[in-house]
Length: 66
Image (cartoon, rainbow, N blue to C red; front, side):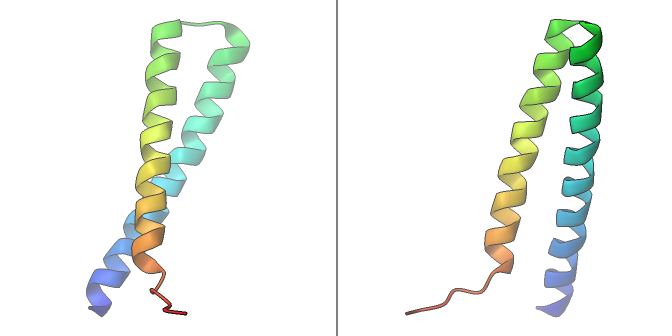
């Protein structure tokens, strides 16, 4: 259980890092008006990462029954 939790935290860290990196790349591409298709793909990847991050965060937060 502890090893799985550590693995999830590592994966979460990797996803957050990639998400931040994509922010930077997307901002640069938007400023320079490069390939719109490439920009669209990066934004789609960023949204997918956001969904994965949310899913992992929900797995790491314990369920509290009120």
